[in-house]
Length: 313
Image (tube, rainbow, N blue to C red; front, side):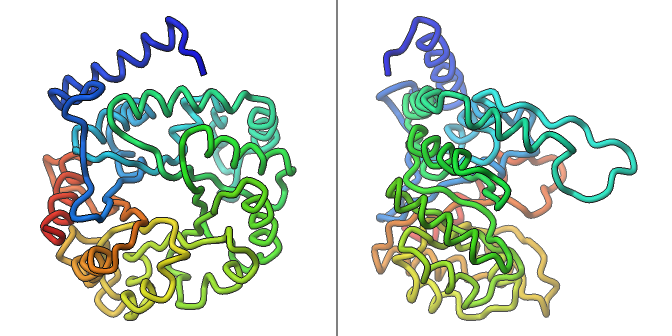
């Protein structure tokens, strides 16, 4: 893809912004590095949701400031590419789904836009030393095949090696369909679970296709009452696309999200297992605990990263 003068201007602006907060980060010098003793630590853009602004270029700025060199993008990448905004929900509207008509508008945009647009965002990130390893998107039964094609093509264009989405409950037809698109594009989908996570939650999807994988959230897995975190990772390490890293308490202790090292999740042991076994999937910082007064998401992600590093060096 050839960069126009306007493209280069945006590229330079993004790099300059990164350099302003992380001296020497522009282009080849002083790039961020969050890989410690072979274990890649990343971050999901959702972690910066409480920052203002919280768009794709701001996420790049925060990531570089934190010294993190790889990310999972959720929502911000599509907003950057021109995704139509959902209209505000009318007072008294029932349910939590999309406003009427918006799903159709979104499908039209996704199936007609030029996915090569995402290659530009990849260049902006890469210029500051940050790679994009996962593209999070929700795929549903109602979507046409062309929208599934969009998801996989967009993920490839942005430089990701897999997609992630929430695990659909009791919908083997959907995971089987997604697996077929994974085969078509030779790209895995990692399914993320919350408190429904049990040791067998992913079994059916994994059996349907080698392109169906696990986006293990070890914090949610703990809060769901599972005590076999290390054994689960050992058993399924080759099917884990990436792992969300957070610290939560067991349900009998309240299940809350906690700062790293203060909950029941064996964060240290998990990271050391990854180091010892040379697992290559990223461990993704996902900031969900309540921000302390006077702090912000960038400062708290820095604390999470420092804790992870202390477990690995």
